[in-house]
View (spheres, rainbow, N blue to C red):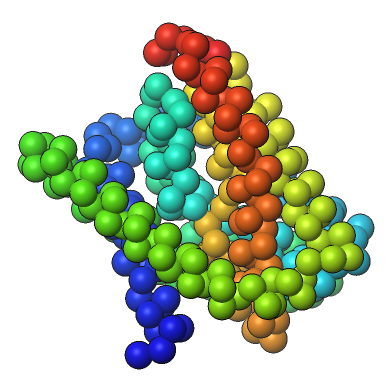
Amino acid sequence: MNVATLLHLAFPLSIALIVFALGLRCRPSEVIYLLRERSLLLRSIAAMNVLQPIVAALLVSLTHVHAAVKIALVALAVSPVPPILPGKELKLVTRDSYVYGLLVATSVLAIILVPVTIALLGALSGRELRVAPVTVARIVGGSILVPLGFGVLIGHLLPTFAAKANPIVSRIGTLVLMLAAVVALCALWRPISWLIGDGTLLLCIVFATIGLVVGHTLAGPAGDDRTVLALSTAARHPGVAVAIGAAAFPGQKMVPAAVVLYLLASAIVSAPYTAWRRRLHAGVAPGTPA
């Protein structure tokens, strides 16, 4: 069994465990939270699925970076919330509902919005681009919806067991993910280094920064909502982004490296924002708008 095969097994397993652990502490009412908060749902879609794809299209049209970087940014801009982000967000906020609601809503809507947005962007650029809804459904279903739903079900039927299992499953999933990420980063480091230069890193930083600002602004006055939407707009599902690149641009083999490069840049950009929001939320009573 080679490294590629191990990574192919380790990443889905670790993400499924992490999302399953999230589901163990999630109440069924939180899954459909944004159905009750329609104004927040619309603003979330506007930030993540309208404004950020427009920003990505403008940035890639105005710059002269590697084609794989342009593809990665556009693909990331239309992708849903990454499955490991909610665990980070839950440590920052006092209200969990929006974290879970946004994860589920963006995952379900991605099955429709990703193919439509990619086709629209292709038409605007004079190219025929297609991503099958089943491709997106398979990824978001396997990495988010199925393990989360199973966790919610177990948590609802066996709350005592879920409370005990949650930290154990989460730690195992995180450990496997960290090991797999280190191996993947080492394997992709050479193509990543090829992409650094000609303004690529700066472009990734600018794109992530705009995502934070857009999400923070459109979330509304509640501090928890601002934190969640800002981080979710800046960071997206890498698996969906890579699948978009493979489906729409099968000849571009550097897209995975470009996606990883953006994830690194996004993590660096988000660190000061996360630290600021952590200090802010620590000084605000639960339920009070920051």
